[in-house]
Length: 231
Image (cartoon, rainbow, N blue to C red; front, side):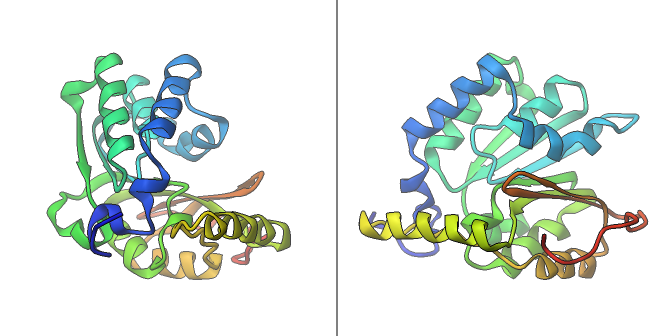
């Protein structure tokens, strides 16, 4: 894949790993069945708001399930999707057109961590299964948190022995196929630290199978009974 490490297609081989075929398959599934349960759990606090969010910034948007669901349910007014994969950007834009959301969506293929300054702040910033694809947690998450005016919604892998085993298997398989993609399990305390430093506090910390769900808000108490350690 001939590109510099700082080009969208050079970031962890995201453009090559998440290609047009996988993007089209995910987009088709969404049109048929809607968002998967993990994504619905992630955006649940956003869907519960009494008034639509003025804007959503969906980083690593994939085929667009999170922001498409918010838009078509009337929980958001506008959405911007960002992804390093050209295939996913194309599929997200296609689904937006099919759903009648073309005028309420904008798409960019780039590495958000390097180009965050070009984006306006959004009421909600969403990253569904994104942190595990990016090597520099601090750079990406800090940039995302700084663009949120109200909410930051994240899903990321649990950090326990069997999740690490799955991550090891993914990376071994990629290396055996001479791929450069790597799967990352970042420490949850570090994720929380970065969010706190940006002035965000959790309104939800929960587990959904392989994934941790963390939704932060600008002004909210810490949920009772949750520890800051990964489960």
